[in-house]
Amino acid sequence: MSHSPRIRTVLSCTMLVAALGAGATACGSSDHPLSAKPYDAAGQIAFNGPVGSQKADPDKPLEVTAEGDDGRITDVTATDAQGRYVAGELTADGARWHTTAPLAAGTQYTVRVSTEDEGGAPGRKVLTLGTDVPTKKKRLDVTFGPDSGKYGVGQPVTAKLSAKVEDKKARAVVERSLKVQTQPATEGAWHWVDSKTLHYRPKDYWPTGATINVRSNLKGIKVRERLWGGDAKPLRLTIGDRIEAVTDAGSHYMTVYRNGEAINSIPVTTGRPGYSTRNGVKVVLGKEYAVRMTSASIGASDFYDKMVYYATRVTDSGEYVHAAPWSVGSQGNANTSHGCTGMSTDNAAWFYETVRQGDIVKVVNSSGADMDPFGNGFGDWNVDWKEWRGGSALLEGVKEGPTAVDAARLRPQV
Image 1 (cartoon, one colour):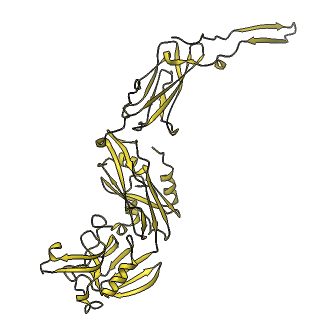
Image 2 (image 1 turned 90 degrees about the horizontal axis):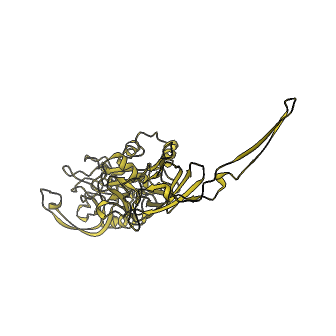
Image 3 (image 1 turned 90 degrees about the vertical axis):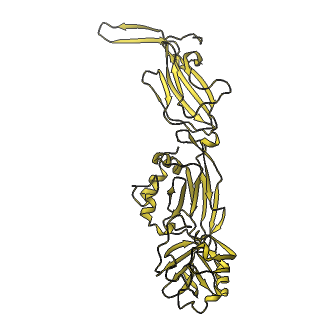
């Protein structure tokens, strides 16, 4: 081993003892070894990191071991380029240190090793390494939705994953890395719709005028064996007025509210027996000036083929609020449609111009089935808050309220 000469402490003491038992000591010493300049500990340690320009496998732990019998490791710290520490463990005898948390992929690390020899002289060695960037097959990319822009108070945030995540621990890693920041602060939670899809919504509708920023901290983080976090484009949403359209299929009227105040009452017709309109809360998915509707699209036994105007879509399966001039005589009196909500052309044009994507359309008193929570547009608001929280990998079983929000916020970050 080659390093600066070992420095040993030499003590020289003279003790004077008086006849009556009183005494005093006078001692002198050389410099303490800890005050010496650290030697290069390269020959005192072994490191399992890559050599030269090679990259480390992020799936394998880092390890530093003491070489020979004349020294030991006293401390090791490993940090990434942002200064974040990697958890590690040093044995009591100073013979071995290893990481206890996974490394991130595609990241640079600095490992600082402190040692001492048998005489107590300090040694230092700084090691650097980079980790491999995973291939696309090993990368979990995230696509947030909808597109950045202005939406209604009912618009959920969505996260689509490029690979399935089934394990609960892996889901917790993903969910912990998906950040939703709102102004004003609003309690909300992610819900796993399936192994590749998450939705985020607040307990109640978004506040009017809210700003929502969504980002991912998942890049480079190990999700599970051979799968690391990948890319994600951040998302920014702003929320408009609270527009709610409530259709009472029993009275055949739709009342439209803006910020809690009724601004229009419209006679309508909804689905007739056998094609009854779904009950529950739906969210505006989009608007189309003209849509061709045919009996074949819903498997209706009676034939129809119509061009429909001022069509506002509320389900993926083809339920719209639209102009239906052929049924004006029934609007306000009877339900005659194949499931859509029909109204006069003037009223449909007004509705079309008034609502935006993310606004609320609610149907009550229909004999139809309830709106599906998922898989046919956004039925998210038909899930009560306790059940919604139960679909989170982080909040399941955590008590609701401010304490729960704080608990989620204070969880360790990966």
